[in-house]
Image (cartoon, rainbow, N blue to C red):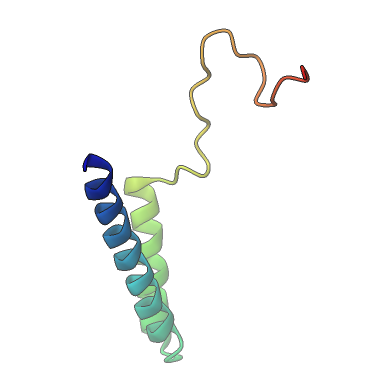
Length: 73
């Protein structure tokens, strides 16, 4: 049952992110320069405070020298 709760939280989080992304898209499409600048500034501030896992290098496990899988069959 623990996995089910985690899946619900993940689904809710994804739905919230997608919903907010659509709202930002609609406000930017209004062609209002002020709204556009605020949207860009909001994304920049969010990135500054929360960062992005896409650009962070994961910790290397002990003894691991490469990200590639081994060539052993």
